[in-house]
Length: 323
Image (cartoon, rainbow, N blue to C red; front, side, top):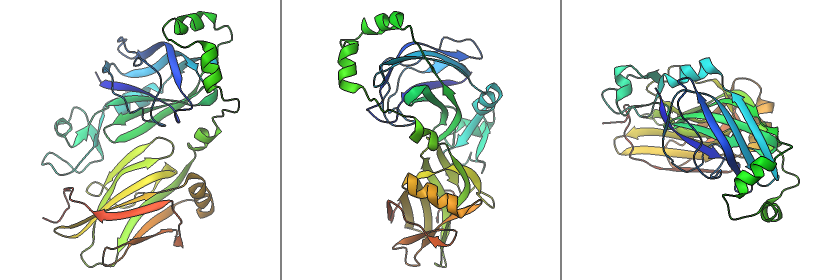
């Protein structure tokens, strides 16, 4: 039976919601619920840890108060059961430097190699609450974070029962919250647009004769997904359907003691337009200078503008690092 932390996140601190009644529905009918308190953090990551829950999550029944909309919502969500059961059986590669690592992206949790630190089982069930009752849910496996669905909560019109329940436990009145937090134009459109996907892959190249690519690590996407791609299990093309990247991090080495990390930050609107123009099967190329001093970025051979980029030495150990 999986054991995990539950997080409740929001787009930013202007969009706080507070659960009033909640239940996580599990395959094993365990007693699972949301953590105490309101949402926090950023989209797809609350930044808080609470008491772990147990049981394969297959749905949620939640009543919550959207402080900035002065509205109570009811979320009755059925997760894709077979998909969740499949993911709950997986452990994703976290590193590749131990002897028990088998060169796979993920393994079955019952396999022997899943019992070492290279592979992480399901560690978190994450909720993201956006305006107008839009809710997105992810599963996290250490670094890896995978969306399992978008769901729609319904407005509760007769909310007196929940108003009394909530405001008997907090010091603020409903009027206080309305005066401080109400946002008349709150819209989920931005976070819905984050879910748009394009078929593309990142690659790194260099003319240095001893260049050795190690992988793309801790990649973050605007839709809340997080991904690790280790070179030791990557065979051939890494072309996949992905959302717009928020941050990509790559590693390479040219000799012992000469190992580097590159980090790139992207603008959502800019990259969305670039992907639309690029069409299917696009390639983002990080072309590294032969002296390892800098790199250029291209999308299908055309220079690509980004928010910022960095390159610095790194001493992380990988299976394919120079010994």
